[in-house]
Structure formats: C-alpha cells, structure tokens
Image (cartoon, rainbow over all chains, first blue to last red; front, side, top):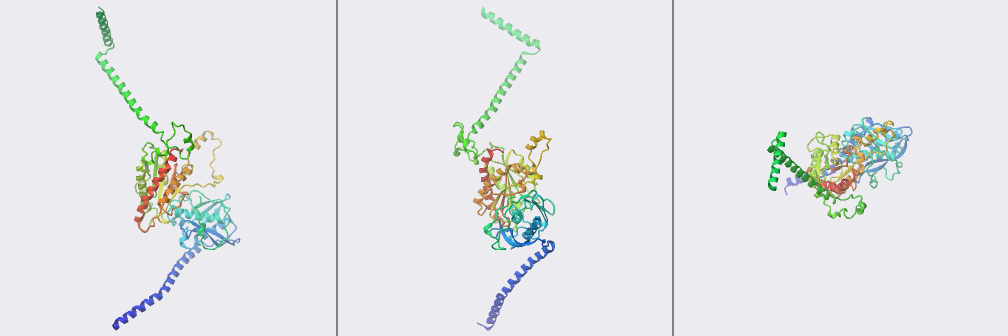
Length: 218
Length: 317
C-alpha cells in the first residue's frame, strides 16, 4: 500500500467519524427548530386569543376530545388540568380554547390551529352559540369524515364539561354558514346530551385509546 | 206464377229503393261506397280495440310473483294458496328485473364539480373527478340490472345543493346516493352516511298554525318543507345507508361496521331515501391506486341498491 493511499484512507475515516459525531447535534438542532415553530403558533395565539380567566376559576380536570392515537378516524377523551370557571359561558370558552390550542400533537388536532373562538353565548333554553373565525371553515380539510370529527370534537368537549348545555349552533365569523367545508350542514343545531362532568383522569395529557368516542349524534 | 209474383215484388222494391235515393238526391253507387267505408272503419276499430286490450293481460299475471314485503312475512303466510306468492327461489333476481317497474329510479350524485374541486391530494387526485368516475361506474352496474339511473351531473359542472335535490325529487319512486372522496382517513376505507336532524327543538322553533286557518290545515300538513324534506325519510335512508355499509365492509377492510347518521348538506332537501358514500382518500401515494377502489365501491353500492329495493319498492313511500 502506497503512502498516498494510506493518507487518503485516514482522511476519509476521520471525515466519517466526524460526521457520525455531528449527527446527534444535527438532530437536536432540527428538534429545536420544530419546537420554535410551535412556540411561534402559541405566541401568535396569545396575541390573538389571550387566555380566558375569571375570578371564579378553580383548578379542575377537563375532558377534551381530540383525534385518537390508535385511530385518527375516531375521537378519544383526553383529561387535562385547566383553570375552569363555574359560569357556563366562560367555562365553555375555556374548554374550547384548550381544544384548539392544547392538542398533545399536531396529528391529534381536530380543529385548525389558527382557528379562534370569537364569541360564545348561552341562551336561556340551553342553546349554545359558538362563533368561530373563518379559519375553521377555510382550513378544515374537506371531507365528511374530517368535518364530522371537527364538529364532534366541539360538541363532545362541551357536553363533557358543561352539562347544562342542550344543543349547539356553530357560526362562522358571526354568520350562519351553509356547510363547514363543503359537506357538514351548519344551518341546524347539534344535540348535546347531558353527561357527567369530567371524570377523574388516570393519565393526564395522555389520550385513552380504549375510550374512543363514537360519532356524535347531531 | 208464384215466381213471377215474387220477381215483380222484388222489382217493385228495387224501384222504390232507387226512387228513395233519387228523392234524397244521392245516387245508389255513392251510398254503397259510403256504407262500405263505414263498415271498414267499424271493422278497423274493432281490431284496434282488440289489439290494445290484449297487452294488458300479462301484467295481471305477472303480479303474482311479485316478492312480498320482507318486513311482513306473516301476511304472505295468511294469503290463500291460489294467490300465495311463490317461494323466494322462484322470484326473479334483481339482475333480471325488466323495466316493468319503470318508476324506480336511482339518482347518483357525484359531489362537487366545476369550480369546486373538493378535496385535493398531493399526487394530483381531485375529488370532483373521482366522484364522477365513481358515479359513472355505479351507473354502469345499475343499468346492467335494468334499473333506471339519473345523474345530477355527468360533466364538470357544479349544480347547487337544491338543484341536485330537485333531480331526486322529480321521480315518484327514487333514491339518491351521493359520492364523496375524503382528504383524511385510513386509505382504502369507505363510509356510508344518512342525514340526522336535531331532536332538541326549542319551543320557539316549533311551527304553529294560525287558529283561524282551519280550512288550510289539511293543505299545510301535506306540504313538505324544502329545507327539511329529508326528515320524513330518516328511517328509510338509514336502512339504505346500512345496506351500503354492510357491502362496503366486505370490500374495504377497516371500514366501520355500521353507517353513520350526520347532517350532510347534500341530503337535507331530498324527499326520498338518500345516503352519502365517502371513500378514503385523495391522500394516496399513487393516484392510480384509487382505480380498483372505484370499481369495488361501484359494485358494493349496486349490490346494496339491489338488496334495498324490494323493501322500498313494495313499501309505502
């Protein structure tokens, strides 16, 4: 083996070792960048939709319905700790905001991350009126399945955390919309059957695949 | 002597007949022509009447093998032996159903179209094209069974929801099946949907009749509100969706076992049994991977319609 060849092999080996050593750092950098993007969305949300608080807020465990980890075509209740008010209107706003902003991972998100709850009213007969920003309509993936998951996640989350509500009406930017994204009819109401308040959670912030929720009856 | 007298009598009668025609101003040959023509017309009328009456007989005989309603077997058992329906093995299969029931119509509704693309996949799959392909494949399957099929669109146009519903509401005995392809969901699964209205109705929403409008009550009760036309067909539509989902599960593993009731806008104003079918999804790695799914879905829907039809055809609308 000539001397020049030995030098070449040594240089190449050193380069390979150097590359392998730098892999870990590269991966950390990619993760950091991905985390920065999430925080950017959160920062924007804090400006557009600041946290809803009230003097009557107490720490409570809420059940939020996101897409299941076992099957993204189903919803699963996920217990999370929130500061919840006793007033149904404020409480509804708080759980809906958590539904939009606190998903454990983007894959579990049922509503667009940029959607905002603009207003929420409760009528004396128990009818809840939720007014969302245009993003709910424009950024929800088109399809019966995805649209029904979005509506069901709103309805089931309200049902699980605000038992006094009887039915739900969804508005888009203050107006009645014909459909959510081309399929699901938003001109009517969605029934909310009263259920027990949020059950104690065994594993906070962890979806429970065994409790996959069936499709919500409108 | 007698012969001579008879001959004179006939001659006199003939002269009197000729005299009669001469008095009324008509000639004998002319009257003969008129009488012969009238006889021809009468004969032709008799033949025509006999010809029209004849084809009405077979349908009366064919009414005997009409399958009894599936949901009411005890009535068939109580029928006298002479008019009793034959066993199911003698019932002609749906594949041989001729246009003897021309009013049963299957309306196929390819979702989206025109400027509305619907869902779009990263590989170029577009929902509006796929739904049209699905509807055309299903039409072929149904027409092979002798069924009447109407499409709400057969080109790249986008009728409104009401225009699509109007196509289904025109025939007297129709069903509607709306096709969609989702942008999410496990690839290779399919779902059938029927419409479900809210049951929690506020007292303010309940329509009331004017107390003084007694004469118009009957008229009002017969009218179907366009906006909620599907409400009267909820159970039948759910049954149709169940038939479809049962077939879909066999062809598309991983699909739900039962259909879903949800407010799908396409179905709300349809005054007939209606279901929506959605295939997952446009997010396939290769757009051509959907081609075999289209054929399978068309076969499933056609088979479901065949199985659904007897219970609807013989029932009340």
